[in-house]
Every structure is written in C-alpha cells, then in structure tokens.
Length: 368
Ligand code: PMP
Image (cartoon, rainbow, N blue to C red; front, side, top):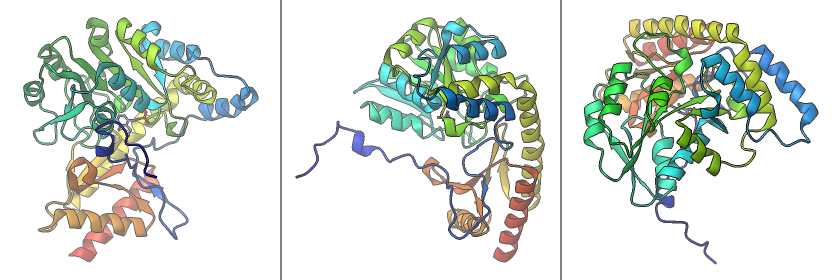
C-alpha cells in the first residue's frame, strides 16, 4: 500500500544536509565544515552541563527564565522580548509557520541560508530568492522582489556562506523600503564574531519597529551546537505569537543550564572572538598567497573560490575537497548554495589552520 501524500510542496524540499563529519579510515579528523566555534565551549558551560544530569527527571523550565535573564543582562535587552528555541533553526521555522502559509511568499537573498526556502516550502509558501551583487545581499534587488504576498524577509547578517554583511545603514534602508506587513528577520547567527562600528545585529531595530526580529544562536561562538540552543529578540506582539506556537518545553534543561554559564563567561567569548579574528585573517592571507580567491569574511569561516584554477572551477573545488578529506580535513563545497566552485572553511585552532593551508598548498602543487 502506498503512503498517503503529504501537503503540496513538501516533496519539493531537498532535505538539509549539514557539513561532513566523517572520513572513512581517518583517525584524527579536522572538522571545518560546519562553522562550529574553534575553541569549543566555555569550560564553565561544560561543568554546568555535567551538573544538569542531577535534574534529568524534571521537565525543564518552559519559559527558559534563567537563560533569558542571562541574555538580557549580557546584551542589555528587554527580557520579555526574548524567546528561546531548539537552535535558531526552530525559531526560523516557528516564525515561518506563524506568519506565512499557502499562497504567501518568503523572500531571501540568493546565497542565503538553506533553511529559509526549506521553512517556506514546509508551510506551503513560495520561497523567492533575490539576486545578489558580488556575493553580497542587494538591498534594491530585495526590495524589488517584495509583493503584497511577501510575508517574511530573511536576511542573515553576516551571511553564511559568503561572510559578507549589510551595514547598519543598509539594513535601515532595507527596513525603510519594506511595507509594514512584512516581518524582517535578521538572522545574526555569527554576530558575536563581528567587531565593526558599521555593523549591527539589529536589536535596536527590534526595539524601534514592530516588524523586525533578530535571531541568534549558541551553535557558533558559544560552540554548543550539540545542545541545539538559539533565541529570538522580538517586538512584544511577535514574542507573544512565538510563545503561542512553540512547544511547551522546547528547550531542554541541559541546554538552558549550560547556556546560562556560557553567557556568563564573557572572558572566554572574547578570547574566542579574538582567536577567530587572528586566524581568519591569517587563513585568508595564506590562501590568497597560494593564488586562490578568498571572499572577505567577518564571520568564523571563509569562502574560497576555485573558479580561477581551471576551466572547470566546480571540478577543481570538488577535487580539492576530496584531497583534503583523504587527509582527514573536512570542508564544505557550496553546491547547495549555488556556489559549487567554492569551498567554505571554518576557522579552527592554530594547528588546524596550519594543516589546512599545508594541505591546500600540496593540492595546488599536484594540480600544477
Ligand atoms: N542561521 C545561519 C545563517 C546559520 O549559518 C545557521 C547554522 N548553520 C543557523 C542559522 C542555524 O543555527 P542553529 O544551530 O542555531 O539552528
């Protein structure tokens, strides 16, 4: 007997495939395929996680109260506007579910995060990708693609996988051009890595306007991807909506407890940010010296193009990925994002960065 058909659009979804995590026959892996924090979690978060075991028979706090208090204190935000989720993925999905449906459009920038079209299709909405200019979101192109059916505009800032960003002024211009019925979701998953005066993660826009949401994650600089923890900062009415549609105990107790300890360890986060800056600049410079085109990044990864290596850049990128993988180094080829001639490499430890540069140099030497 055949299985019942799901709702229209569901079978148009290609399942999300994350960065590779295994290489057969290799004992020591260097995992640079998923933009995970290079230094791992704060030791204080690890200790708190271990202690969480004592209360595993209890349901978690359904309101993630201590965690929201910690975030509000650290970032100077209004605690009532914070909603926590099982990774920011859950919050992106809940926003889509609450604000878009069949016949609606969900707009994003062409090389935006894959979960935007997946979330749109999962509620029967139509994903609409606006073209970019030079691998950067184009405010005019985004605004030109807004229709009366657009319900959500997702913009990752900084963007994964390009590492580019919209300045505060550009983000304001984008918002100013949007009709009030569109929810602007600023996905600031990599915000903690950024140290630039012309950048904003968007919390002040959330406080100023009723249609802007900022989402954040513990999977990147906090390096707690395994716990699945994220949060959204919302106008009061949107926080209310998210609290209506989310599951009753959506954030597990270990994630809440470790999350509180992680945000309190500000010295460790600053160390992680500085480490990232130093090694991102170092990796970009070395790969450029090797003749590769490295797209400027303000996040914890770089996008490296192999387009100029041969007449077939896609094949060169694939060959480089395989070469690295055979040496235990996992990076991500960006075909799913329409950039098959590019590899994305996360910033890792010093040892990992030196190993990846040596391996890329060996690959290019063999290719010459
Ligand atoms: N947004 C962007 C731009 C991302 O790159 C990622 C992770 N790859 C996410 C959201 C999802 O993060 P989380 O682990 O919090 O679900």
